[in-house]
Image (tube, rainbow, N blue to C red; front, top):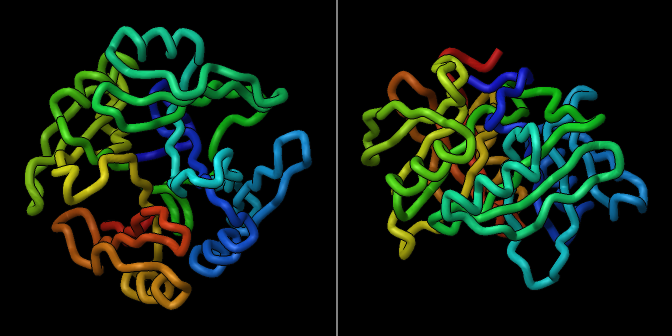
Length: 258
């Protein structure tokens, strides 16, 4: 499970690149009870999302107006420059070379060996998400990939992830965890047909009532991708495209998020 004791390679931050930050803040604020705090001009209008005063993610202005709106997952790196070299050795690509974000930390953006984008964060004063594994917070991440074997090999080489197979009604599914800490499982890896499902990283946000949250997301302008359904011994999930085209999922876990 996710914790705020971020192991190397564990999810440490999420943000949504979006063309209308106030509108996105209103959508997610209504849906998950998030508050939006716009930072100063030195960060280009980046908006921190908080739940009960604790950071749960952020909204980022699109650098290119033609770019698609998408949630990005950041993984913990001790050294963003060394991680860049590891990505290149493993067959990935560099989208954004390592750069400092004031004194808050150092980020970089990549594609894995199958072409899926992801980010890394080397913490400075911003140590990462302050709330996870809770209602209104990140509870899981999931990689949809056209080549599960290649993807798992890539992330093992870069972050040292290890894996367990998990029987899924939707087909083969692999659980990922950092190093040897099985209890710190943080992601699933599913192979998809790219003609039907866009390969990408996806976030899961915890909710009290999956059906009610799904219905509210649709009322607020979201689009149904997957109506709520149960996964035995996991929980009840649903998937939505937000009004800006970004995909995300909701989960009511078993046991309920604490």
